[in-house]
Length: 93
Image 1: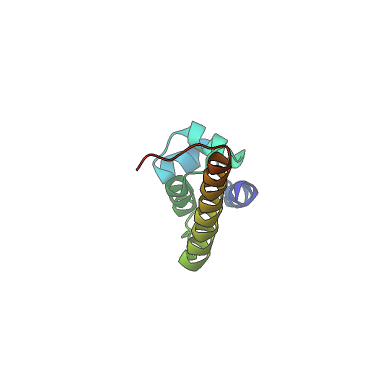
Image 2: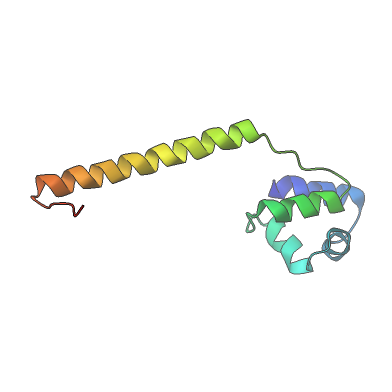
């Protein structure tokens, strides 16, 4: 998204400072976003709105990714428990 943001800004012929003014953010936020250093979804939304676009999110895709992350975390916890039980450690109840 960082590359797309910069390309769209340049197509519009505006500076990072001008985009920041349109988006209601500091110019350093635009600079960091264009370098891929800002991952906040709210920031991306403001910047694209500042360029005259809307940022649409596919909630289904986000839910699938969240489910995958939760499953990975569950598997890690189960693995730690089984290793602890094999080592003779008991879990307090």
